[in-house]
Image (tube, rainbow, N blue to C red):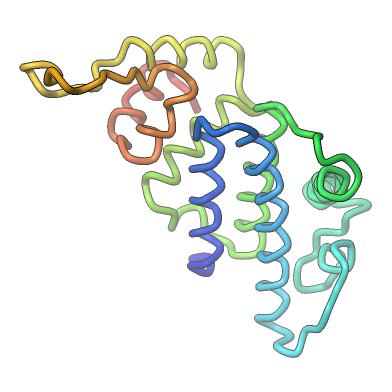
Length: 203
């Protein structure tokens, strides 16, 4: 079952922010992940209860339609912990942020929430989202230092420009292998990124 279009679009937005080189991109992506989870839970419940009113995050998790009890269900517990961290970031500590791995874990949990609520959703994702999520997995707790190092090396060494004549005089060559420029290629050069992931045997 495909997830609602607005949820998939929001996920693509999160991935774009995560891979962008803008300042505090991890903080922004992390906060948006929590928003995706809440919207996903509401969408799932409203499919069976169209008159759904206001509900707190714990109530959304514990609802019979979602079955992600935040005190006992492994995914529910992680989603609730992320929600609490997000609340602290937004309401208690405006300077708080997260590291790349914590943010990557939140993205993967949001995807699992989407899949839990809309079984088969991951299979229906566009290829660019699937490939981008493979990169996120490399940088999450599921990844390894070996894969991260190999991916960074391959991003630096990969031949991105196909123009045999090289750049024009007035052009500046930007190496997307530098982390701050990954946003230029991760979501657009799907075949290249997939080739790199397969080369390093990333899951």
